[in-house]
Image (tube, rainbow, N blue to C red; front, top):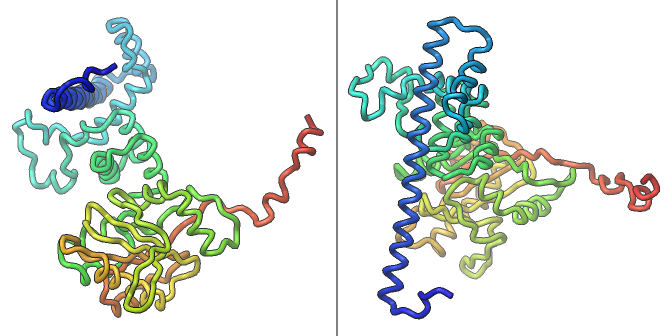
Length: 357
């Protein structure tokens, strides 16, 4: 039994502080070890590239290097031929990384900085497994690779989360919604609000029948709210569905209400299972204004609205937003797991399955 229960408050606070300091030191140590390992991998990748070019070794180069290193470093599993190839790809993807490390005094030229995005210590801040996911998809595109490195750092993504956003082309979707944020919001809030949008939003985590109704889609999103929040992006907190708000003598019900902790503002999300119609903006604009008057605190930034439709005409959406004063974004959504309405009827019964055993 813990002695903490039998000690005074000062002692318990001291013990707690010690444990927290130890955990922080463990995290720092793990981060340092990871960073040093990645720097070693990057340098080894550079040397591999130079040696291959210098000695013109044949197809068995990586296998030979792997075998020789295993003899000298028995028990070390980092030098498989596959991992050595990843190290070379790591260097080739970020060939100028050493230009931005503190220990290198040489300054990069202005011409080089225009060609190669500035990248330094940040590429040494995420796990090697994450880098392999990024390299498998974007080994020849440093812009996209750096995008996912920075997103991983900012959002503390696990490898599985990173794989999800790589597979759903987050780079192409991020900040792509049609909005009036730049004209309807003060800066830099407008830029930050634009950045949290996506177009399209992917609802691949939902399995739903064809000819689904709007309520069924919203039910499915609510039942998978954790995954929906992940798709919306970091900082979103779920406030509720059919959120009731009293406006004068009437009651209004918002499809979904969120609060974004990074933007410090409420976000009203409306889902439409039909193509975009300009009339939908009036309703959403009313909801946004109502939240500003009834819920928004003095410390909150202006509320924004996001209308997610099945399809949209981009020109019509842009024109419609010009007539709206409230900050609103318009996006589409995609579904990947649609099955026929009579899908269950095509499945074999328990009796039919047992008869074939």
